[in-house]
Image 1 (cartoon, rainbow, N blue to C red):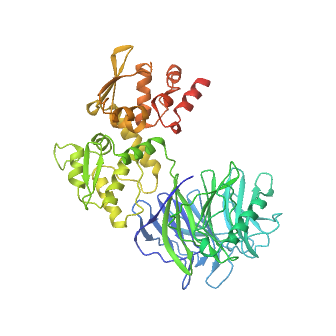
Image 2: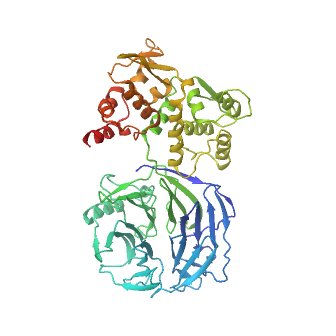
Image 3: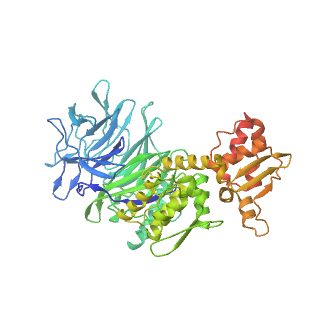
Length: 558
């Protein structure tokens, strides 16, 4: 998995810098509770609106609420939050379990756990909270049943029990990575809920090789965190890292080791299908090494990271990690924009640098406004955007129009807002969290473009039936196929009308065009058409990652 990382500027109240807090996503908001601050511990609950990126303090309407704490856990289950344990301002190891209802902002105290829980991990499985490890846990695995409202206690058959670890649930197992027991750890354990069975799946030989390499590096060479062989990774010993389940991976973000007094800057993924670790972080990852931060999944393609302790300082910074699934439509359109071929439109940045584009693509993606009467949409865009933005802003804006990818890492908060305001004027406000929702709009807009016969500038004739013609846009065909890209760039062959020499029927070509424009394959259901399009990837030079051949093969095999 590849990702891009952006530091997010927020508005509203100033959230205190902290570590050992917890964040969770509920609805369209991110909730933050507690943590360690410079002057002690904190008991506030804050909410970040993920649409406006504005923080606000959540004031409880109940008379009782949890005390200040850090090193607690916080989970969402059936529209309620569950806060467990932690360490108080008086350094008391807390046993209390609290329930919070975000619909009416009320706290309710439930039955306390059998023992104090500090720096533990929790997961939700089978209508129960499972709490593992922690400081002075004595090998505890506690379970709270939501049905009976009772606690039970299990004793894991493990060589050691860690604190400041991370735990996730995948299928019927709990996975626990890293943490601290006498020294930092890098072990990976599983607990099978159904069979009540523990297993260690650490590749100890690989771990030893990786750790020896890390120890051979100088302190300066350890930043950013690197590995000897990125194809044979086992994470270094660490604790205080952030961990979560994302797709079919356990993500591990940063962390710390006392062995070398090092803060890690890596982002790692353990593939739960292949049982292998991968290094996911970028060389220019803006997240500094830290510990006792927290992370949460906020959409199907985005994870956020907040706060932590970084080189003797508490932090309140927020980062979004966008894991783009990179559909071929988005990839191809981004590449086409960067190539600047067959352009018929030009707009200038504030510093008078031109950016070239295509009127048909602008028209497909931008809605007409009433501001300029009957002027076409590309001309409207020119009047609104020309010489209004820095080059990096204008490039980010047009890249989003073409690909649905909103890249703003090099923009300040104010600069990003300028770009968003222009896009909003044309009904194309980007979703800052989810690439998926932006991509769905891209599919819809380019799909509609194929249906728009007025703007089409290219004809494909069917030799077997002179009355049948496919109408298309040169820009889309050039972006999505190497056959037409080469044809349109050839001076000797600049015709706006060509015969299709593949021997395919009009119906098959029409279905192919719908795939080329939208990237969607679900409209291809006819067996004869599937047979006709089986080798279309090779003939037209389509991106093979688009899955057209696989889709046709699956229809044929059925």
